Each structure stands twice: as C-alpha cells, then as structure tokens.
Image: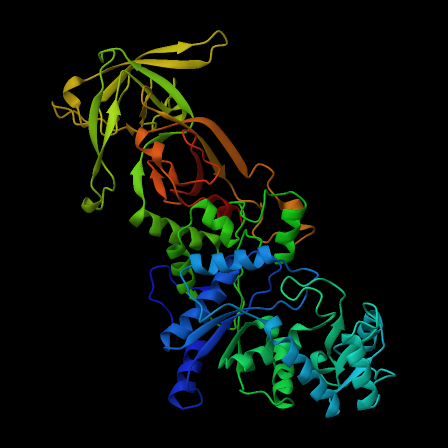
Length: 560
C-alpha cells in the first residue's frame, strides 16, 4: 500500500477497473461486496481501508455491501466485539445492506455441503493430530505425505463426521479434510482442514455445535450464499484463492463470487496487528481497546479523529497489489487539514503562569469579541472575558530570552490575543527562586490588540481570565512506539514509549468550554486540536489532544 500526492485527486485502481469491466461486459448484474471481520478484537485503521473499499465500490456501482461476521472460532469471539465492530462501521459513515450477517447463520448449509464433499469423494475424516498434519504437510520445496486415513471410504467418513457433530469425540481427535493434492505446489491445496472439533460456547449459537468450519471453508461459501459478486481480500489470501475457487467448483453453490486481492495498509510508527493489539490490552500496556494512543477505530474516535478525516486519508491511498509502508505523517497531514476546516478556535492554558495586570481595575470585566474560526465568517464570534488577572502559558515567558524569542520577558511588550498590549514590569518568585507570578501594565487604548500609535508588537500570546477560567484535565499523547517498524529487531513491546501519555491537571480553559460535550473537536489556539473525553464530568472536563499543529514526525525522519 502506497500513498498518493496529498494534494492529488482520488486515484483509480485495479479493483475499480476490474469491477467496471465485469459490469460493462455483463459478467456482473449487481455489484455485491462484503466486509467480513472476525469478532475477536476491535477494528483498527487498517480495517478502515477495507471498509471504505468494500462499501465504496458497492455505492459507486449502485450495488450493496453486507456486513458479515466470520464467527467460526468460538474460542476467541465475543458479543462485545460484535457490538464494537458495528459501532465502528456506522461511525465511519457506512450502512450495510439489511441486517448484519454471520457465518454462523449458514452452519447448517455448510455442514450439508461438507457431507456433499464426502459423498463425492472430495473430503475425508482424518485422525492425525494437528501437529502431525503440519509435519506431514511438507514444505515449499518438498511435497506432503498422504494421511493413513486419506483413503477412508465415504460411508466411514460420513459416519464419523456425523459423530463429530454429535459430540462423540474430544477436541483435536479428528478433523474433516478436503481430498485435493498432497503434492501441490500450493500448500493450501494439500488436503486442507475444513472442520475441527471445538467444545466451546459460541456467542450466537451457544452449545448447539461442537464442530466448526475453518475460515477457508466458510468464507467462499458464505459469499456464494449471499450472492457476493466481488470478494475483496488483502494479499495474504492470494494463495488461498485456488482453494476458494476449488470449493466453489465442487459444491452446488447458488452463485459464483470472484476473489480479488489488494495490499493491506502498513503505517509507520503504528501497531496494526490484532494479535499485538490484544497483547497490549490484556497485558495492561494501554488502558483498553479505545486508548487514544492506539490506532483502533475506537481509540481514534476517543482521541477526536473525525470519520471524514479517515475517509479522506483512505481515498488518497493507492489501492494496489504493491506492498509498502505509508508514513504516518501523511495521516496527520490529512487530519490537520480536516480539523483546520471544521474545528472552532478556543483559548486554553495548559501549564499556567499567573499574570497580574496592575493597571487594570480590580473587579472589572471586559468582554472581548473573538472569532470562532478566522477563515469562516459564518462560524460567528463569541465573547471572551478579560480581567485584572489572567493565565498565560509558562513557556510564553523567559527572563533571559534569546534573540528570536518574541513572547513575554521583563520590560517586553506583547499582544494578548483579542485583548490588550501588556508589558512585564516585575517577576515574582517563591522562596526557592521559582517564578510564580508576573506583574504587568496594559495599554488601555490597545483593546483588540492594535497599538493606537502604530507601533509594531511582534509577539502574540493566548491567555485565559483567571476569574472566569474552567479547570480541566488535558491528556497529551506522544507516539506509542519509538520506531517506524515496531518489533523489527525483537519484541515489539520493547519499542513502546513508556512516556507516551502526559496528564496535565489544573489546566485553564475559557468559560465557553465549560458546557462542552460530545466528540466535537476544537483548536486550542497555538497548541493543537483537542476533543473532550468520556471521562469528563460536570464542572470537570477532560480533553484529549487529537493532533498537534505541526508535523511531529519531522525530527524523527531527519534522524533516519
């Protein structure tokens, strides 16, 4: 998967052209696609590519897209994951055709088709253990060996298979295998397992079944039952396509779907393996699947990423069979661009330093007009209170500043955004010598930030009125991993940044943010984009940093 020019148009790709050709040549009457997740974890940003592709192609060709859960492994599946996946797909902006579907909906039909394969001599019950099956399968350079039970009669295999369903055997005692070719150059055709025994509770069928079809057996046949025309899969399934086609050819299926592959999304500095994500959650390296440091869709949503940004990011990817790594900076570029257009501006001070404006009357409040969005007049304005004491960022003051520092310093004048010009006249320290407060004077004629005599003031800083400030917790997120390719040289956990979360308490927000609710992103001026977190309580807002205002990966790329 590679990236297009960030400013480029939405590219065409081989899958779109294949579908167009099938429609124009009459091979496809109705385009039907499907998104088939396993309900064994939460979706991540890599799944967003598959979701957008499957739903997007169906919409583009006036077809339909099914949401179908591949629920064939009860040992790893849970209803909570099913619910989370449906929320994620809907949040991303897509509606599936009809009700959600499940491979378990077709268990009876799949079982009947398995018996058909036995009857026609194309499947047999094998007593080899899973370890022996792997050992006898051969290698890429050596053919496999026939199982001693490969020549079982159809009658014997059918009787054993029915007893497998009845629960007469323990887990692993027997499997059903296709009888294809143990010398095939494609290992997937060396008598693959179609059914295995699992005495486990299924989230939808309970204890009704104790044998379950493998993905390879369930997938293509479920596509055929649903009338799927184009089964779009990532490249790891390319070698499975001959088996997909073989099963369709040897079963009386109602339709003949076709499988096409594309490269999955690989994103730098990002963990996208569901196995690794599960380990992060279960081992407590992150809070849960929706931890904002994760690239899960629930984590991105909690962090404040708009679904429109994800859709736009995916639209700029070159969907092809060429594998590659997309720089995470591209995703952040799209995210900033989306938020810059939509997020209203607010002022917040994360590391507060008090400023007392001694020339401003005690008890007085000026209400200043501030633009909600400088590039969008339709966004309107808001009133911001200004009082004798204000909070500024501690980093906006230096006692001995370098030449290019254009913020507040002793004897220096700066502009308070939307407010007045102020000059620092005194620095107050505690007993340890730490700066605790600044004393300043203001120019009463400079309301709005313009000097009446035309003098130039180079620095502009944000602020919050101390008398009106809302106290808040703000969570800042750095990269969860410290390398572009986590785990490339060892255990990926060793690449985790233990300081990737910084929690700031006692932050000061302008009062209009007191009643904020829901995942509506805002820009904290000069700081970045933020979104309120579900942990918020009345009078105690919690904000997550969605993304900084600048490319946070430039320094990392410069080192490489």
